[in-house]
Image 1 (cartoon, rainbow, N blue to C red):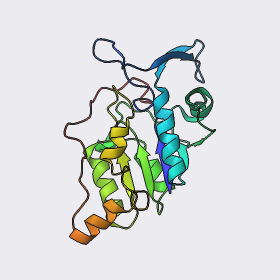
Image 2: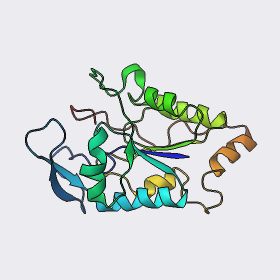
Image 3: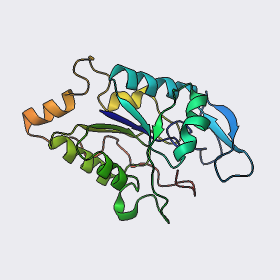
Length: 205
């Protein structure tokens, strides 16, 4: 089973409407590929421990799934205390929105690459169509759990709990699928009460 992890909005929270950042984050500067000068980022060290614990407990194969691409491990993962994870080679698309076709632009690449494999995918920018896609995969026997943090807070333990990842170890990854199969139900299309914010940085990271 694979763990896919975004960076912006997950490990790097976005500034709020007035430029405020969450408590507990630290300021750092990195120079991404193609940049001449360092850029300021905000990192929450707790998020690194959360994803590392998740990958370790479930023996998941972790991947960076972000437009930081090859910069993800050396520039961000290392600052979060994470091992060197491989990254998904996402295409460079001429995007004007992160939701062409009404769903997350990364999804086509993920669907092709992990056609018959179970996933836990952490990203702040899923749409209802993405949650329906995950539900359909799960109903077809491929457990697919989408974890969607608030991008102004970044990943929290509450996000993992909301996704059913806080149950006894032997049942955590099976329970949602088993319950729905037993009842003949679909998994909830959208696990949050409010729509995710639509604002995205121009880089669409």
